[in-house]
Image (tube, rainbow, N blue to C red; front, side):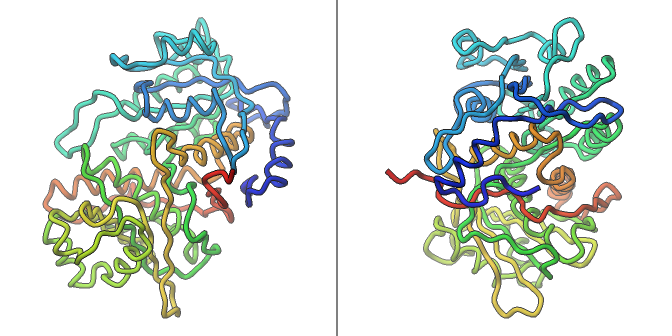
Length: 425
């Protein structure tokens, strides 16, 4: 499916907005009924961990409620947020006061968010479980209850004999087995499932989108993050890596082996040829947050996830806190002397405009009932991340599993935002 806003000038935006009003009802029965056109606003339920300022639920829900800008023009989604369930209510919760002002209902159970008295009266469900007070396990993974809340949604679908599309923010689960179960449930009950990070759809500088079947041989993502656990932003790094590596010759054929290294072992792996110093230099040059000085001298605790794909391609994600903060990619293409590279633009909070790009793609999903890019991508990144965290706990020991055997084809257009990310007065 193409991106409805391939270039964002006034004419193309207004033309696209004119046709965005008629929506496709995403409701799909267990018998996979075709979606039906309707001009009414889609009824959406949100099931969140928390709803406070700068939480992911706040950024996504706020855009559904208030709209957002595309190329300096206001875009109002053809969506009605009807109910919200929050797993936690911290002191700075916004939902209870906001719901009275904006007209949605805050309910006490996930099932109630989908409809009263065991009914299903919404067209789609957004599961946004990020942020909140949750413990970590021995592998330093935050035990977000995405799987458990997803199961509550599935129970309603099974009880009414009908299902609607579900969006899951970020990874499906910290646990690869649970992530696979969520994916399998969507196939069994025949409902659209979308998940993932905002990184694959935010702006890129330069605007890099390799054609499908580009002979990519190696890819590298550099970023820096030192708050909470490393798992939090390594997921974004893996999604950044994967949205480009999935475009290689033959498409995605799965991962053979995953390792996660820390400290001097990261530099040693590069010296041994397990990842490329040259690609790192290219990625750092592209990154506007690149620090002065040598990366080996600057970075006190480097971390790396090494991905060995089943087809022999290699990928690496590097957490280099003292060197960079934002995300950049560099890749090596067969029979080319130079490498390709790009920077993934993340406009800062409080606006966090990269959520504009994600919310627009969620809207595409709600209208069509099927995701604009394969959920298999996020199933793979979720699984790689889980095994990477286990590898780190095991001192960098390689991890292999049949759960990493995930194949899919990327769409011709990945749906990332082009053009400006600020308005011109």
